[in-house]
Amino acid sequence: MAYGLNLGLLFMTRKFSRVCFTCFERHNVVQVQPFLCGLRSFASDPDDSKGDSRSSDASLTPPFTSPSLSHRASLLGRRRPLSPLERLSQLLPEDTLSQEVWDLRDKRNSEVDSLESNTENDVKQNCQNERLEKDEAASHEQATAHASVSGEKLICFGETLLAEYRRNRRMEFRKMFQLKEGLKIHSNWGLIAHDDIEGHPAGRILHTSMGIPILIRRPSLEEFTLFMKRGPAITYPKDASAMLTMMDVTEGDCVLESGSGSGAMSLFLSRAVGCKGNVLSMEIREDHYRRAVLNYQRWRSSWSIRHGEEWPDNVHFYHGDLISVGSQLSGRGFNSVALDMINPHLALPAVVPHLHSGSVCAVYQANITQVIDLMEGLRCSALPLVCERIIEVQYRDWLVAPSLKKDGTFNRRKAPFEDDDESEPREDTEDLTPFGDVPYIARPHPEQTSHTAFLVKLRKILK
Ligand SMILES: C[S@@+](CC[C@H](N)C(=O)[O-])C[C@H]1O[C@@H](n2cnc3c(N)ncnc32)[C@H](O)[C@@H]1O
Image 1: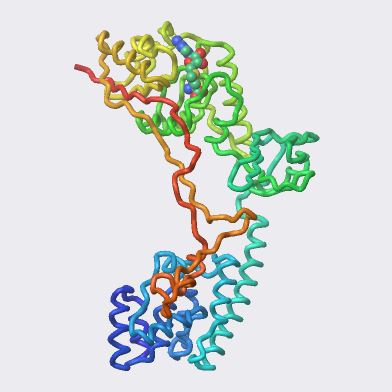
Image 2 (image 1 turned 60 degrees about the vertical axis):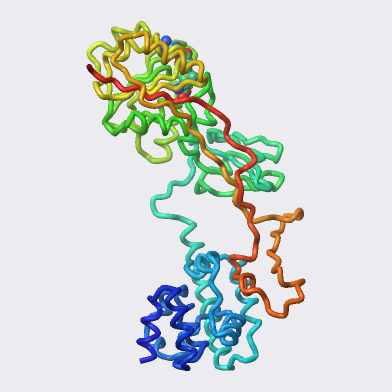
């Protein structure tokens, strides 16, 4: 009966459990300690809940029940409420906990209440031993798994990579480069030979000639566009994503873009339309046209080395003036248009006839005065366009990290009652779990992304 009772209780809400706990204790139905243990085993390894051992009271004792908690609970006849961090700590699988957490838990367990029985100590010891064995097996498993993950490609010559060095939460060094035989990465932090990088999995830390740890990994498309060589300013990734949403770009779409600039927006469009779609990108300046094509090719070639398959060749770059482009567009229709160029309102008469009715032309303008010019251009024209929205995309970066001392070690949370005269510890600070021991900095980041552009959403509507 006790077994059934405990199993049922495991699935009750904590609030309800707390009420039940008080009732049971008052009526002496079960002893305090096993009951508490039953509740706490909620977070223990799922394997622990299997098998016959579950039927004995001792087996319900989890490895890390707080002695002071049970002691206080039995004295006060009520349970201390769990902090959100404590709840989280209990819900995490044991094999994901760091050594720091285990050390702190072990430390707590060694402060065993003298009222607790020897049997309980034995069970704890057994559980601890079991956990150590499990840890050993898990770390061995992890080491094997990290050596080669199914489908993972090792770094090859020809790939575009990122080298990064962070210190004290600051990015000290970041460089995008193409891996070539015989070359070296030069930095104030020492050298790394490209030959020493080849053959490693991406996302590995290698050390420079000065012993500085540098992370070597593959850049995302966002990072590639931010670090690639530029002609003119690019459409920033955050704005590019919003434009794709605004234009509702879907796989298989046919999209018109101008100007190509450095080719950043072209790459985002290329990914969005996929192998069934295509992008026509128009650029008036020859040097910008070349730059856009080079960046596009560089991304595609690195991609094919990394994935062993081609990135779709779906962007067609044209060198020409969109305003007088008539012949290039004749007979073509577009699901959407992206304009990032000076005086876009002058290009609209050439573009709008080729835009599907009900579809969107998204315009990217750095200054609000340019947006006003665009609106005035629209007002003075008879184009079938309505402005639906003008937005600015703003991300707010946050800094959430453990608070550090000057020497680089973690600060520890101080229990306020330590210096108090009160004999009883305060309920909200007692028995902190390892997850509550380190105070965190949690506030908006001191460095924020500044203004990039305004996005104007124009829709073609036939009257
Ligand atoms: C800010 S850049 C575009 C950047 C591009 N969106 C990217 O993500 O790399 C603006 C480009 O528009 C081009 N441009 C300006 N007027 C144009 C026109 N009438 N026809 C075609 N391109 C034009 C400029 O030469 C310039 O390269």
